[in-house]
Amino acid sequence: MTADRPPEHGHVRPLVALGLVTAAFGALVICALGVTSLVLDQDVIAVPGLGQVPGWIGMIFSIAAFALVVWLTISRPRPSYGGAAVAAVVTVLAYPLGVWFGAVAGGADLAAATGAAGGILTSWFGLVIALAAFACAWAGVALVRTNARRPRWPWEDPDDE
Image (cartoon, rainbow, N blue to C red; front, side):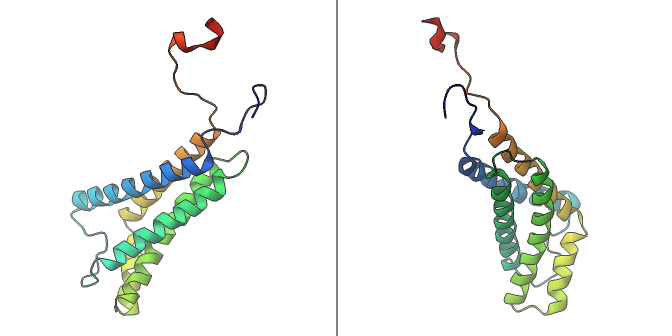
């Protein structure tokens, strides 16, 4: 990178941005699902007897899908904010898929696993997952695209010397 040529990816490297937004997505979606569950007085996985494993597997699938889509978006020379919409769709589909696999692996029958996965897709919980993914993916693209620098005090300017 030279002084007269702008950086290819802004001032935040894509791998750093990916780490930041993936951690933010994981924290935000866990918090948002908990708050939504509290407000609605409803379990995220409403099928009784499945235990916690489907939720863990769903979260792992969701975070992995989010990270993959965001990486594919921000590793390009000029990433598009449209990748945030793709991340939201893929992530909201990955969570119930993980719940379904977790329920089946945990010994639930196919009807219970499908009911749990479908219940997430057709409830407020699916919207919460999509919104969290969209917001965090948007932030990841913004981090990579921006050419902003850190704030500087007036006396730090090298031109004043």
